[in-house]
Amino acid sequence: MTFNLKLLSKITFWISLIGIIAIISDFGFSQTDSTQRLIDGFYFFVLAMGLISTVGRYIKKSLILNKNVFTFDFLSVLFTLWIFYLYLFIGTAFETDLLLENPIWLQIAISFTFIREFSDLEISFKRAILNPAQLFVISFIFIILIGSFLLILPNATYTNISYLDALFTSTSAVCVTGLAVVDTETHFTTFGQSIIMVLIQLGGLGILTFASYFTYFFKGVTTYENQLILSDLMSSKKLGDVFSVMKYIILVAFGIELFSAILIYSSLDASKFSSVSEQIFFSAFHAISAFCNAGFSTVSASLYDDGFRFNYFLQLIVIFTFVLGGLGFPIVMNILMFLKYKVSNLFNFSITKAKHRPWVLNINSRITLITTVSISLVAFIIFYVLEYNNTLAEHSGFGKIVTALFGATTPRTAGFNTIDTSAMLFPTTMMVFLLMWIGASPQSTGGGIKTSTFAIAILNILSLAKGKSRIEVFRREIAEVSVRRAFAIMSLSLVVIGSAIIGISFLDPEKELKNIAFECFSAYSTVGLSLGITADLSNASKLIIIAVMFIGRISMLTLLIAVFRQIKQKNYKYPVEEITIN
Image (cartoon, rainbow, N blue to C red; front, side):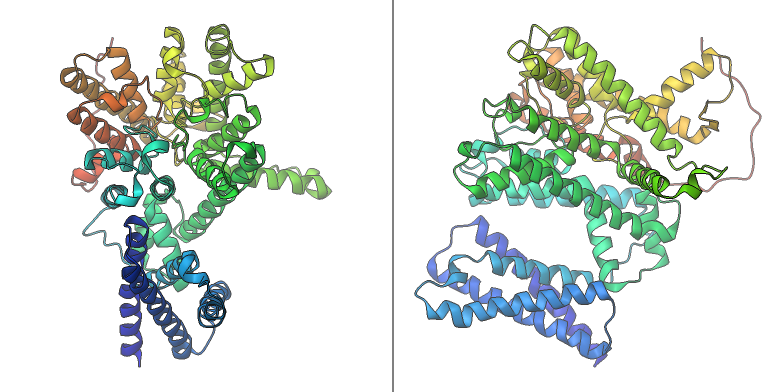
């Protein structure tokens, strides 16, 4: 019985995987009537196998494994039975077959079946084969390649695009960059834009986060080796917290995206959309793109379009969304914990009278928040003053403030634009260079060298100026390994960006150096802003930008860790010598 059930589960998984491929084929290619009927029939076969596998699982174990798992299975079974009921009774009772003309319900049910069967597989990460850095790099390459093949499907585009352009778009989406060699609105269909949206979501949160968490959700257990690997990937200090951290990441991300999508929808003028579904899709796409700091838009001119340029409420929502995404999940969760503590403090007088006051907001959160607010405030003032009579001239008083705030925050890896970027003054452009290089915060959906790295560099300068031998802040000493890592990240970023600028300057000598440099900084920091040369780059230069986007997303340091063999620490120490610097 045990062997047969395992065999049934594996067979159902492979059948459900073929079902997912059938869905992709259904959307990606135009089907004849006979082929469509064959695909629809296979859909029902997949659902039937999923029902048998789910029921068999409970017959074998005879007990409810987990309340959440049981709820998922119960609702999935009800949903599947409802679809069969519609097809067998409602569909045949009328001339119009509800399902065959609207197969979306079938496809959703098959997706649930695939998730359930995939999560029942034995997934094991072997440290002897792949270290966490290698696993991280390979997962991104895998998503990019899958996405590139999906984007060249006939129904994904209005006009055929080259594989290189599809690879560029897929890399830009997975690496949450936003640079585009083809116009997302005019080249990609709703199906193609949906692929880009999914790639952005997977790239922003990570495919390993989804795969690992759903496997744990249904099984309830995992191996110690898997926990070690995932704790390294999630930077979790406790093995037992790995999956709870994953759960909070997924819940926080989806919660913010849903809240943002609702606000975006409410801020839009319905007359600018041909249907409610189009307005909903616009809201969902931009909420995901904003939170993941991707910068992709379904509108050719992004938020600079005439229909959105003066919609300041929409711009404030987008700012709120990408700033939260750029803070990083640990920071957002720590802020929520801090707010929870403050609220409980208001209603619990015994806490307010206690002598000991816990340090809820940790040092990472303090440094990140102070750095983020300081950089944003300084950039806002400079942008407002410099661009007052330039790109801000067409806006009113409040409009100037919102647009200046947007222009000051979006270069830190968000990538949306509400102004003509190429029309910025030269001093403003130079400031944007710096903002792009700094980027977002650690363990966020954004790129760049990160705010904490920049903060450590500034603190180190102040420490040296004061004659200190250590970096101290908030009655804490910054670990030496953090300082070394920060300066390694800064140095490697300049090496990658500099090499890319030299390469593109050689391959496209007709392009201005400022435009090339802007493109390379934007690609490395996964920003997505451009001065308008992306589509005109040669194929070789596009490959360089693809490589820079990829390296910028995973970081050059992670790539080096993945390439170099790690050595064991030795229990000896050489005499210390000081090197002359200046």
